[in-house]
Image 1 (cartoon, rainbow, N blue to C red):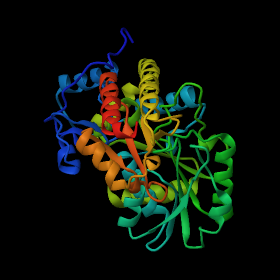
Image 2: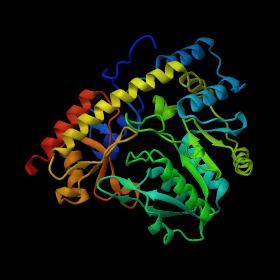
Image 3: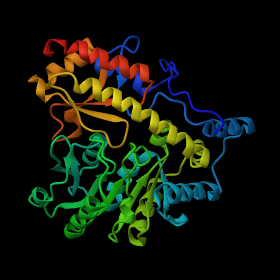
Image 4: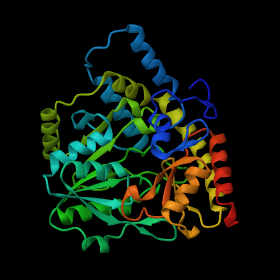
Length: 391
């Protein structure tokens, strides 16, 4: 990387078909002209130059046919996982889906049947439940324990919740929205729980590159001999979610065959732009950019947490990974509707509503911190004013 990225640059995304910016007023009643979008989990930063250069090379050649020859793409994935995560991946384990929500949907289709239960540890990324229910399966919610402002597993309680109808468990690692980096011991316990219940174990690790200093992500497949369906992507790491590309990586031959069968039946194949960008991103230059990004996000986290935690009744859960702050408003004594109205109408900030993440989300909002620091500082100032009467 020849020069440091400018994460402080304000880039105008209004009118660019940005879900985060151009749908904010319709969803929250907050205008993008004077509001701050802190909901959709993409970043207001350009990806590294190597990704932009890969696109320029494609447009220079000017023909946009079907993608072929995956050798460089697979090699980039194997290199990244080995060098950044200590995980050895084989070519034939790799499936490319249209993002990891699509990957989740194919897992549900491949490994469960209508009426089956799928276990989620809630509160958790809302798209999981949406996909599960749309497929005619049922969501089995196993609430996490909030212990001194930090989520922990509660296997004793879950034993009484998960019945024989459950066929699959989806783990979010690192956790969204709580920002937890699960320890190797916790991950082993999850795998053991899945083994006891004979559940297909799916580990969504899309945020595995966005880990705050002092914490370290552990790949689920590295800590257990129980078969794991791994899901990873370049999209969150490099802010290229619009490419809708993700990888489902399966070492177990039986699970791999079942997944391949559903991919073939659904006629799924990747788009060339996503594969070209991912190949460029998973590189030494991409790695250097990610290191700079994480350092910047850590600075945003510190500013946001200090400001929010100074407001009586508000508490931001310590963020170990992701760029998504999970803020508890229950100490205000207000209802969800009351404090959300202050955030949206007075502070003019669009943040994700806690109940959409399932049981345990009541009383919370999720804020996206992956934006120039000036916006994070402005968001803190607006929240301080909006709840100024609590001072």
